[in-house]
Length: 423
Image (cartoon, rainbow, N blue to C red; front, side, top):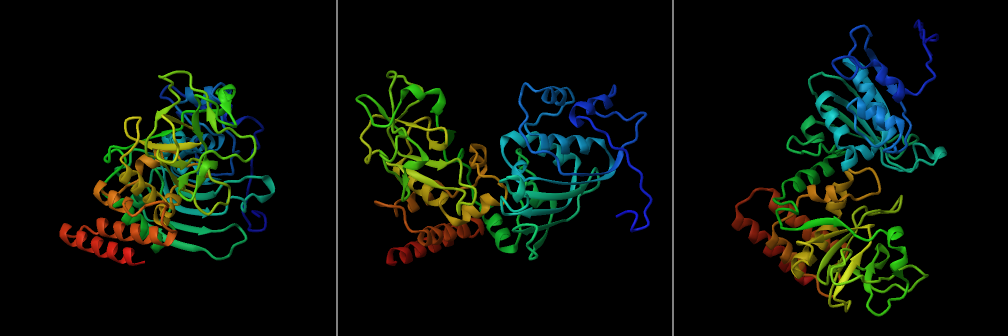
């Protein structure tokens, strides 16, 4: 290509482990002290995608260089960024998974402090960009420079490389990484409709912590408790809840299909794997690779399952209050809110993989307790239809995020409730 364009080019191919070789550049002042070595003008990469074992030599070398990350692709990008001169350019195609989640927090922090994004393109299909390599992740191509003042960022999306129809939007840096966000989550908002959803969601007044609600992953890890799990409940067992027990917005237990566990033996009155019976909101931590919804919530109703205690599998996130159940109406309102299309759409703006992390749920914004309880009182024996949920939540979000007079907000909400009751 250079020859055809009349560009003189020479190159040096180095056949070595990039991560193990990089610490050779470390000087007295720390990582990549180029007293005698030139920095690079441009880095273009499609780095390997693989988890880094904590006991691997690569992980040890990275830690010695002050780089803490759990995947090869983020390690490659981080090292390349350090190798660039000021105003040097970086282009990379990677999974989108680094944009959120605790594992990549320090990597995102490094990008936020020393990298100015100029262009971001997202493939929203998990299997289109690398269909021949069994890479089932949403992929992103990003371009930016090291150390320049931040400017507007061009965001585009498409289904895959063969899709000629691009959705395009210009965003400001503060929209990509919110200034008050200590997790440095990257929000890729492709169009004005989703931008409105993002604005409204961010305008809601509460986090889970503000509501007095905690989120934890389920305590039962199957392979660690295998000998205590039973397909059919035995005398003294506690119900063990998996995502497969979700049915129409509630937990339906037991599930007798196959030989999968339904219960767990109780080791004693202080069994740490158990929670007392009560109202809990459960969120599936993993979705299928092309499942329509990313955030799927269900209610554990203590009146439907006669048991003094319950255990939840590690594939679930559990909303609770001080390791006990939630007030009934609050639990129902949280489940309605989390099952809305608005929440799912907002979540997809910063999550490009199948996992719903507890840390992501902690950063979501929610309506006030009173508003959630009002929605919860609309739930009787079943979760409302998706259309009804969306209408309830859309009006709630719009009312709470517009900053109107509280009396006017209440008037609009009450009018919406009257309409919903007539449906």
